[in-house]
Image (cartoon, rainbow, N blue to C red; front, side, top):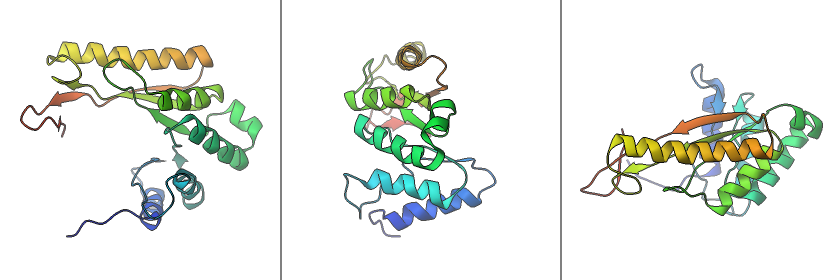
Length: 182
């Protein structure tokens, strides 16, 4: 086996595979990061692939406020701006910057999607022993604090916006400093 950078053709193949899958009901946004397109607009190509290569639900870019606006503009072309305001037609995943912070890019994306009432998954990745206490109780306190803070902000911006509580918190492999996930 050899490793190579992902391409847009790879991303499109994943969209098609999700479309044909009986087990998967939604296309993710960042299945792979295509390296053969300019970084400044690759998110639009990825979203277009999700929209045109599958009829399943899809996620939009959470990478910044500008990218969220651009994705919402594309989604409005597909569904209509009025439907977009009344119905959840896309989702995005917002990650806190542990411990107990949010990056400005994530907050900007959160604000844009929440304003339009689009579903947001707030998913904390706390690593016990590095950015949170080592014990499970401490990890859960930090994860819950981060996630609930994001969900409260979403509801303050637009009450009733669908939220999904997510989390992938884990311990830290103290030998390597990496995720002890599996």
